[in-house]
Every structure is written in structure tokens, then in C-alpha cells.
Amino acid sequence: MSSDNKKWGIIGAGNMASAMLTGALKNGVLSSQDVIASRRDPSRRKALESEFGIETTDDNAAVIERSQTILLAIKPQQCSAFLNQFGSQFRAGQTLVSVLAGITTTSLRFAIPKDVRIIRTMPNTPSVVGRGVTLITGDAVPSEVSEFLEASGSVIPIDEEQFDHATAISGCGPAYVFLLAEALTDAGISQGLDTALAKQLAYETLYGAATLLELRANEMNAEELRERVTSPGGATAAAVGVLQARGMSHLIRDAVGAARRRATTLGQG
Image 1 (cartoon, helix red, strand yellow):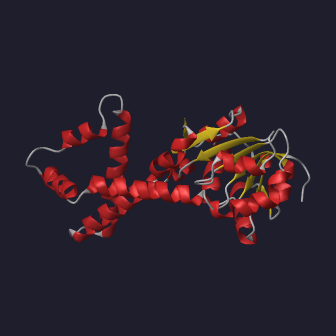
Image 2: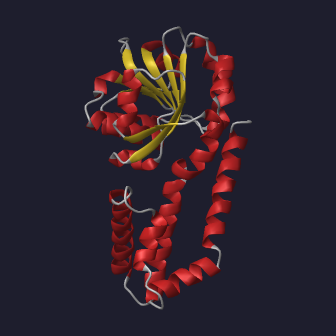
Image 3: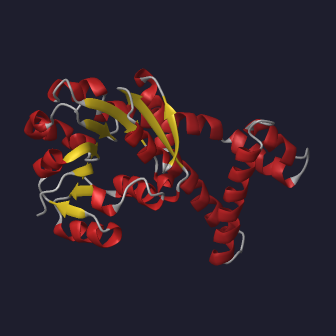
């Protein structure tokens, strides 16, 4: 294993960390030589090396020792054991960037030396195509961290007491949209469309509607856009009426609440 130091180390380089790394490499914020990542599974390490050209290891301590900034992307349930084993190995001047759902900066601070900068984030999966949303809180954010996060999309500072609530919207939100895409596709098939056509219509409609929502954000909100396409007595009105009668808004509110509660629970070990 090479002994040279790295700008960034990634501990637990799974899907989310890989999505963030994709943006940073694609936009020239980092080069592959700037990064070392740890994974236990040899096949996953090989896949990371092949996809990104980065150095990998199964040694978390080596990542901490050789990196200036560490992206901690393990499972929240593994955090306590990780901190017990490796927390004291961080050193003054380093930056720890956490993507662990529910794990507060206070929880991290208990086990990390006081002169280590701690930043809590929550990205989402559209980061892989540069359209992610990353929530951020904690210590002052150095420019290298800002550049890394902004390479994947929008970065939104937020008070930590609202972090789990916001995570339930942006962090979990892509899954809600994907579920809607599934449901629209299935509905098209149930109406006699072939699978490929139903999928195309559902996906392109969602993409177009999201684009329109973004481009008209300064002029109209989502409700106004919906009302514009919902002519009284029309087909859209009939469909929206069913969704409202079945309590779609309440269902989504309940789902977001469940996500927020689970995020908080994850942080309690």
C-alpha cells in the first residue's frame, strides 16, 4: 500500500459516497490520486478501483492516518462501534464529513478530538447526476468541502434541530418520486399500454413536470401549476379527485413523519 497522504479519505464507500465522489471527479474538484477509500469486501474494493481509479484498503485506520478530510459513510448502526475503535485516531486539523442519518454532531464530538472540524451532511442519490440536494450543518465549512459537495448539486445549510425533518424530505424524497414512477408505469400497463411505452410516458412526464416546477419556481408554486392543468370537469380533475379523496396528501405527510422518526431513532443507537 502506498504511504502518500491524500486530500480525501472515504470510510464506507457505498452507494451514497460513490455518488458524491462521481460528482467531485467529473467536475475536476478531485483527481483519483487524491482519494483513498476503505471497504471490507474485496470485490467492492476492486469495483471502486475499476470505476474511479482510486486507491482502496480494508484498513480504516490507514484512511484516517493518511487523509486530511474524511467522509464517513458507514451505516448509522455501525457508528458507535466505529467511534469506540477509531475516534481517538483523528488528529487536530482534520475535517470529518458525516453522511450518517440521525447521528448528531454532538454524538460525534464525544469521541473525536476537539480540534477536528465536524460537518454533518445528508445528500441524496441524484448527486450521481449532479442534481443532488445536500443538507449541511456543524462547524465552519472549508472551501475544499464546499467544492466537493457543490460538485453534486445544491448545498443547503440548516439548523441541526431541523436536520432529521429535512432529511425526511430531501434525503428520502427521491424514493417517493421513484415510487410514483413505478405506480404511473403500472397504471399505464393496467390500462392496456405495453410496458416500454408506459415506462417512457411515466418517466418523461415526471422529468418534464419537475423541470417545469423548477423553471417556474419564481412565478408559480406547485399548487398553482397543478390548478393550471386541472380543468374543471376534465380528465385530470377526475384523477386528482380520486387522489385527494383517498388522502394522498395525508399519506405523504405520514410517510415523511415516519422517515423523520426513523432517522432520529437511528441516531439513538
